[in-house]
Image (cartoon, rainbow, N blue to C red):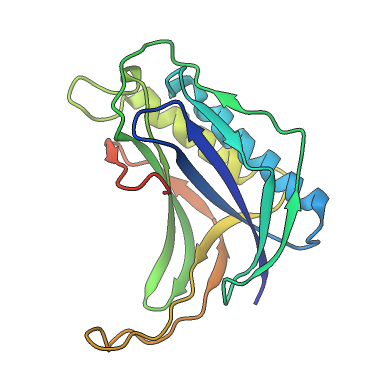
Length: 204
């Protein structure tokens, strides 16, 4: 059982409505200062990605940071932070695909239920310059995103990780899924697939 921070950044300026990126961090002190540290650490990830994001996009942190108990998902507290700026896209090219971009897989080495816990963060949309002529990500794009991911993961501040959400016991017609306790695990590595991924929900 542990408390974790939920940090949310909002994507605006794209077609299809607002988007949201949720990132989770270990809460040790559970103070306002630690909440701000988590938001600032997340800021470095988006800064590292900005060169590939269309310049009409703004990525803005929520000022309310949720403190959650990981095993149940219960809300423990909400801390309000200030002084963290938005990140504007740095790609001047106007062409982009509204539904596709890149993703980072976060690795943990921890089993949750019957599966190895792996998190995923989507970066959608990306400007046309992020892609090869064959529709995959350019080699330089993959390299830069990978560097941004590891720079963020290993940066000073609250430990970043993956939250395996709790699950209630399933009843017929799905009786084979027992209740599952939530669990937070630190990310121990990351990988960037060399492919364009499709965002199916603006809340991923």
